[in-house]
Image 1 (cartoon, one colour):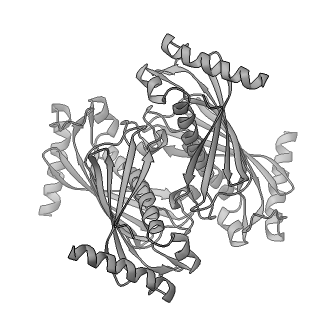
Image 2: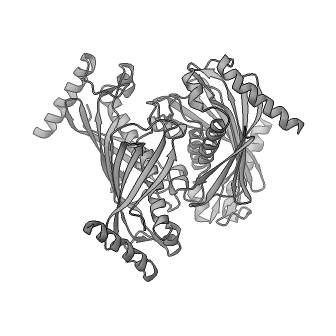
Image 3: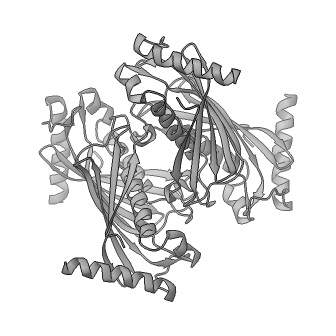
Length: 142
Length: 142
Length: 142
Length: 142
């Protein structure tokens, strides 16, 4: 299972604002793209959670903007699982253009049902999540 | 019931692109804002359709861009019902800044259920729709 | 000068995602709407900064999502200036629906020129900013 | 030079609305993605136009929505040049999921300078545009 998943993204006009740079809210779209690919690369797809009537809405997000991304830039969205406690996950992100870091950030998620009530991992997902947990411990040891 | 509903809209940075004008896709957001307010002003709210398990997805949209809308512009979104046949509606739009027309367009909608299957107007909404029809005929006569 | 500016916002379909709630990135659009109105209500408009060749890009943003905003909700975007040191500003935000707090957050901004280089307040804007500073001190004393 | 350029696109949560399908305005973002890649694949990049102080804003757009695109769908954005007369271009689009057509549409563009005034093709771009023209004639003959 990958610790860090990198997803390419080409900036379009629709991402930019009149300062000629990617609009600040759109970085959270980039984070979602990276997160989706991390989950897909880690033995599942987010649709599998949804099929079980479960969701991982964002409870908290933060971002630091260091350099501007521009139209037609080919960005690399780096995403990794940084923390996993009970039914709460924390993903971290880095948006790069070649060797430059443009932005870093994190999102925190909690497992809920369709009515937004906190849930525990059901058996089929528990196996997946235990693998994620093991991976995090390996990284901490390594 | 109003024939033409006008909704004010203040352009934000997030609406613009690097040409310094409102990004072309965002005009369809403006159309939705105008359409929501037309429906609200015409004896209902779109949520009332949804509560009945009915939806009015867009089957077709077109738009002509004449002048550019810019950051901080206070726009007027004009929306009116232009056609209503069976379970199909057509709204038309004009985006203005003071006396200038910036864009004109239309959207065509069909009544469907949650699975996208075409539906007929159910009794409670039929009364509303008949009023809309009468209004259109009055306009044609007037 | 207002300490806290409240701007109404009606949620559209285009703001929501398939969980039936406002997509997490769109809260940063709401923050921008509130910030624009705070600046307008505080003796200026952001366009005045731009006319002087100056910009206040976001250097950092964070947000806590507490309850979900839904389609057709009439939200209140609260925005206030929380900190002002040299050429750095911090705005804070609260998104409410009636008496409920849906989300809180902040953005930090730095004054730069068109090339992104840090700038000092030029004389005409300095007067404005001193008033903002005085207002913050009054709040701290009060 | 390619007549039809196909670009893959993975749907994210941020593209959907509460009907569980891609929001209608976001198809115009997909069109832009396809158009950018068509231009890049056809001997240039849109940034080359911009470097010459020229732009190709959208003068008209239309779209027919046939089937819904959903979260996590892997779409294929097909784009081709359909018409080129003087300094006016028309692109056409088809959004597919496997063998299904989800939407079709077109955008019409006019060459302008930074102030929005109509322009003629300057010498370096004229060569490129003549190749596009020749390609269109070949298709008509073929």
